[in-house]
Image (cartoon, rainbow, N blue to C red; front, top):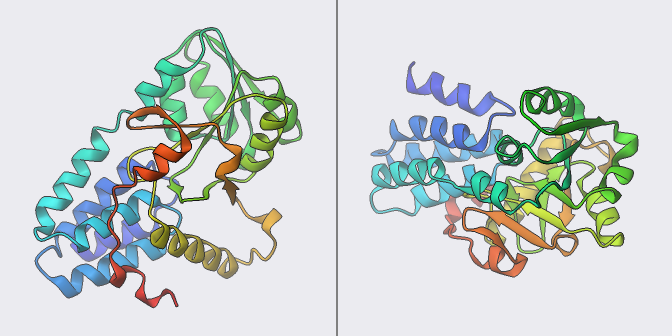
Length: 272
């Protein structure tokens, strides 16, 4: 595939796992790695078309600030491939416990497939929960689909509520709509809420604010004018007890402080 066609394909593909998105994006970036101006344009275009992806911003920022862009691209792809979040999360989940999830989160799904002793309550948000139920039903364990109207009851009936995000900032994170309600119900009931954030998801403040602005701008272009109509929402980190990431289960403060992404001003200079 021609690099420009590859670029268009990556920019327009929705709903792909973050590791695959970074890998495909890296292939497009490699074609421009020795053209500084072209590399900046390519990074801007890709991040604009996939605005809610923290790992994509992480990749673009690291590449644009690197002295050796091709080597940095390869390093980022390897870091995503080596992400151990799902395995470490599976190890931490309570034995014979009940967990609630929303939709079909990629890393959470990977962790649940490693465990056969859990009761999993899958809230069918955005019509994706049914697909996860079907996938997990192939494993041992009890998997139950819950309608969106039962979100609060599912959260209150769990030992742990898992919410996944591909973009985490100093005070909040983007997640599928309903995550804030689930986390709030769990917190009120004294049930731990774990935020699952894989490699590249935790961003420094400047990139986080740029991401939020871009996502809201994209939602406006799509005709979403009210927060309750949006497919994703910002959830306060104050509702989270711990963060499950590449280093295992950590405190929220440790996870936020561990952002390893430099800031490339040229990446979002046009945001305004």
